[in-house]
Length: 263
Ligand code: BTN
Image (spheres, rainbow, N blue to C red):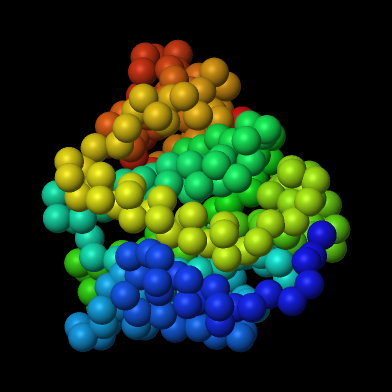
């Protein structure tokens, strides 16, 4: 489902006027907003949060070297933000979980009749299918900054996507049975990100209560592939530090990173 013309210049104006964003770079088309944001982050004069937005991304990247497909009607952007003061470098990956909670909340506000959940580490699922992914990266040139790349299936059609993607993904329009005003989704997402990043700044601890209320994996037996091994365990939520809690045959394990390969 694609709605008619999207006025990206007006949307950028709204982002400037209504959100915490202090610098905006808008592209009609770009390879990857994350790649551009990583370049921008090297500039010490860059006012942050800095936003890179585009109507069309030709080489979008996902986690684990996956491709991120985004056809017309999708929302794709990246933010360069300063690392929250309370978070030491080794805990910085938790920022992507804060961002996941923020995206869940903003999407849920627009889909009151759908089940909107967060899937560790930072995907958002609607009615059991993925609607939003986040790619958080530390710029090699600026370790005190973070790039948060967000892709949301808003009004885009998944009809041309490969069969496996069609089965696992959903757009907000599909869930609601009608299109959304992209500016509304965008501004809501940025406001939620601001709120959640300021929580990260306040105490660096994730709300395990909010996460467990909306956790897609809790109560499921999952397979987690880490750099060392593949672990099978029953998910019981996350810790305040953002680790996945798995009950395994040998007891409870906490995992800071890894990829869920089956659930
Ligand atoms: C994932 O689910 O694996 C993460 C997907 C992240 C996609 C977004 S789209 C905007 C930004 N630019 C990119 O190249 N990737 C992120």
